[in-house]
Image (cartoon, rainbow, N blue to C red):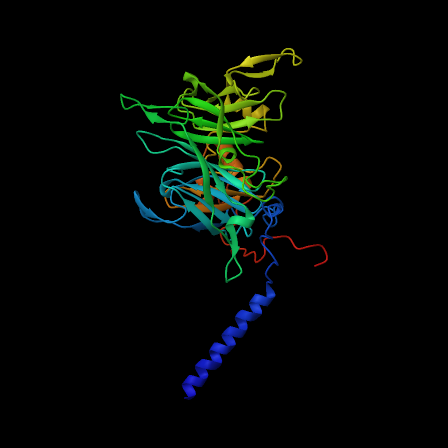
Length: 411
């Protein structure tokens, strides 16, 4: 009995210690307040202070080996961060997964949706500015490459819920998709979305690069999934309006194997910059100022007379990086999460395909790796020690950050 009493006393003390720790680090009232603005305005903690080492934290969810893998992040590739949610294309499990990066040092999986048809081999995502859905591009599997552009519902009042532990979790849903790729009589894949590989979104238009179609297509996407006014206010928009529809497509030999795309919407003329296998060091410029009639050759100011423009079909990527920060680099950043242009963070988020991992790294480390032409995976592996200021000395202990969100003034 004496031994049992000692065990009970020790257990009581341990529980008391845990409760004291919980009180020392109070939980935020709400990580997700139940309206769409939460996806827009929630911050990723202290976004200004650079971390003291290249790799800050990670989350991993994948078991087994291809093709029999299980988990929500197997084959993690393209990702997009809006607010403190990171949307990830998990290629091997045909899934779009959301990772909560509210605490950059401790990202957590908050939900996932898998679709073996409309998300088959999904490779790229883009969180729409409405906060109501995510655009997902699935390339399909070889040799057919039946690609899709899918709309994934992520509305706070539809797919998010609070579990018994006080965590906000999501159950995203694929609500619509467009496919344009079929096999002809000779077994060849034909269509505009064969091997769909990359996407960029501006407003309510999606620009999709398809590597097997040698094409760039412009598609109309919904402004929102919930009717905002009128007699049907609050209802879902009709499926016909939620489904992406084609505006225009350009097929060109210079777009062979197109695998990355960015759109400059800030210049006088809308121009898409595309990385393809046509050239290892250059990018192809596509004029998309008329969505119904995209053509190769962007309109840029003439070097000798900037008041006039000329059509430029191809440009060295190094020149684009040096002269157009709105576009930046296309190669070497496929595994770095994209963000809205006006969203700054001291952190970057790197996906790792083979082990289904999302890592929080120092943004400066990711930028330096890309500028040097080296893999950003070095940052995720913590291998940048001594190369950049963001790394810690070898003997410095790990800095645990109990609350990554900045406290309010006076608190």
